[in-house]
Length: 370
Image 1 (cartoon, rainbow, N blue to C red):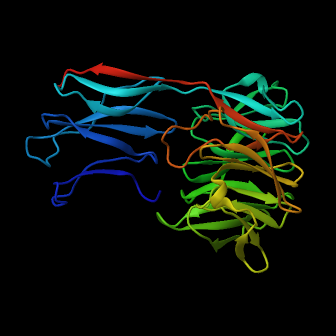
Image 2 (cartoon, one colour):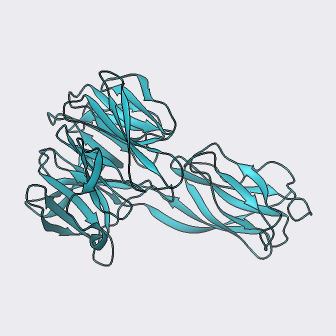
Image 3 (cartoon, helix red, strand yellow):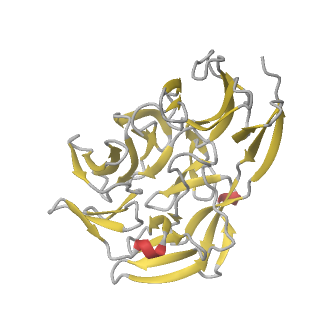
């Protein structure tokens, strides 16, 4: 998103548009509702991986703001989708306790097995030697690293990180925070901002560790692929279609991404353009994906009435269904724009997912308005 999210009110005919609140957080606002007497507007804020309810006093004049927004909820649990009761004495809202269980799909036994003792984590990235793993705790998105057996666990970054990727030499982790890309040592230390334009996302390393690929948003409809040479600091950009979803490299010269139609695209460095990989994304409704450590397979999940896990062999474009996901609820970052858990691939080639074991309830909050 470009610019700060804003909340407006207007007359029913579209006239009299007025700005009533502005946020510096990328999640912004959602689900604003008037109280029946028209004295207040109730809405939710989306900050990092949680939601809270707020209200804004309004003067008797239909579009006149009375004062600054006031917080209604705070704490470890999220509240969202507020609805004031008809008598103005309560606010109905969902309350969510997000919790995930990390599992891997064992290709031999064809079963989901707890991974890293089933911790609540997502977006795993593995070192090339298979010794280390970095991940985001779920749902707060602290960045951690540990041995692949779960020992030597260390928090690297506090809440708000995304898209972690361990460097090919295993010495650093690249991650995105607030639209900037940072490097931090695998053993911690001070993060170093290597891209600080506030518009970047989905960074990934070339296999030789010399180039970082990432996306930047020009506006609400256009995104650009960027290549940063980490030796020279030179940055180049290549235009692409709308809504690119993540990025992975195959070797040093074949970046792959997925567009907003779930069509996989391969970058031709010589021609400086993207072309279809040869996988019909539109009919597959691809929702998540990842590349195997040996660069031989692309794993993806599908949505729709019969969701499934598919393995696509890059050498001959042969696709085979690995498992049905009809009864597998994925943990997701609720209602945060475009943010989701992805398919990670363990060193042995088994896909790793985050299983949703959270709870959701409807609450009635009693309110005494000022």
